[in-house]
Length: 64
Image 1 (spheres, rainbow, N blue to C red):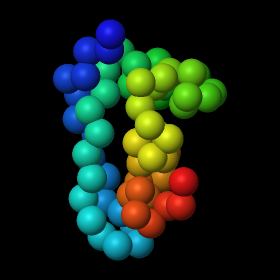
Image 2 (cartoon, helix red, strand yellow; image 1 turned 30 degrees about the horizontal axis):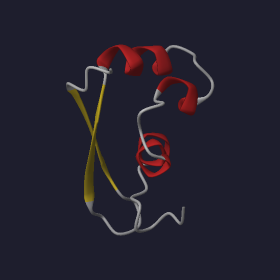
Image 3 (cartoon, helix red, strand yellow; image 1 turned 135 degrees about the horizontal axis):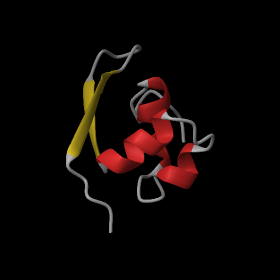
Image 4 (cartoon, rainbow, N blue to C red; image 1 turned 90 degrees about the horizontal axis):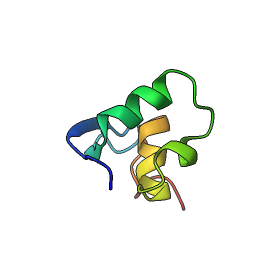
């Protein structure tokens, strides 16, 4: 089970809402240092949460 102790926050560039996702810090390091596919690292996040990490776009503004 992931250790979701790191908060990632982003402001949506479209609606300006602030959104937060809790992730495992080790997974964030893995992703930031070269793992290509976000879904391979953050298997426990929803597609909307992963999109927030990639683009900052909130679920309301990014059609799933």
